[in-house]
Length: 110
Length: 114
Image (tube, rainbow over the protein chains, first blue to last red):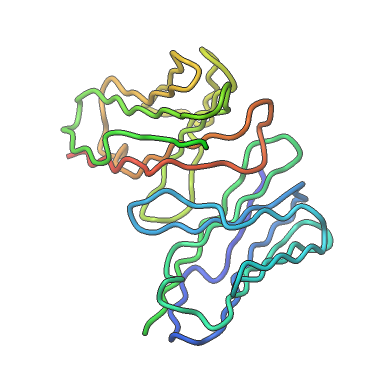
């Protein structure tokens, strides 16, 4: 069974601080997605990373795919209250269905 | 552009009653469709997926069933709800001929079984 472990499970920080969320597995994935979900809504795709070692930036968010394609990280610079939400990583393993991590709940206080 | 709809948004049902949740997708043909359940705002558990009309794959044994009567319609059902069926149900779609890569989610249905 493929598993994606996310850490930390919960993060509460002050506005302006930096943070990193991790997504790790012992399995190799052909691609990995990051989603953000607000309470009562469906997850919204932030980014898809495909190549080992790939780094993608989305404004203050930086996503990295591990060289071995088993792990990924999400780094947020100067967090803002609008970044608050549940962050989910999901891995696609060469034609199988997406495997989701348990999520990281981020709370940014102003 | 593609859009995905789910209804109802919220549902409160007594134990033992039937259930029918509907999901429809617009702007694409022959999408892959998925039903997930999410407990307490955490990770997603895949319940069912479908690659075409009448084709349903079940991921976990449970009290629920799914049907796809039309290309862009996916229905989640139960004959008799259990307390443990409470949760947030999400429908998603992905481009056809792929059981992978990016999935796009609907707004969800919150189900409370009392």
